[in-house]
Image 1 (cartoon, protein in one colour):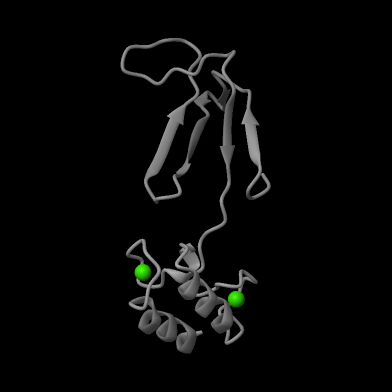
Image 2 (cartoon, rainbow, N blue to C red):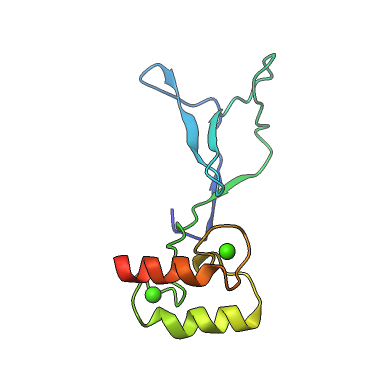
Length: 117
Ligand SMILES: [Ca+2]
Ligand SMILES: [Ca+2]
């Protein structure tokens, strides 16, 4: 799978080594996901119609403080952090105190992350 690109899963009722193959992982918000790809309707089980299109997308984890998105938290992130603050737009990497908004309350946390890197 390529991060950011949707991957189509066509398999249903797949077993390997006599065990059902499970689609497992976690959602972007951290909640776990765990599905058997059943193509037969069982009571109290998830059902995935063979004609349905099922896609999953691997997202890259957010690196708090990496506001210029180069994969590292360095002093080079400072101008990008300031630009996001001034723009008022949300960017997860700049939400250093993780309260779902980017504002001046993130400055202290950003500096702490920067100094720890
Ligand atoms: Ca960076
Ligand atoms: Ca914040």
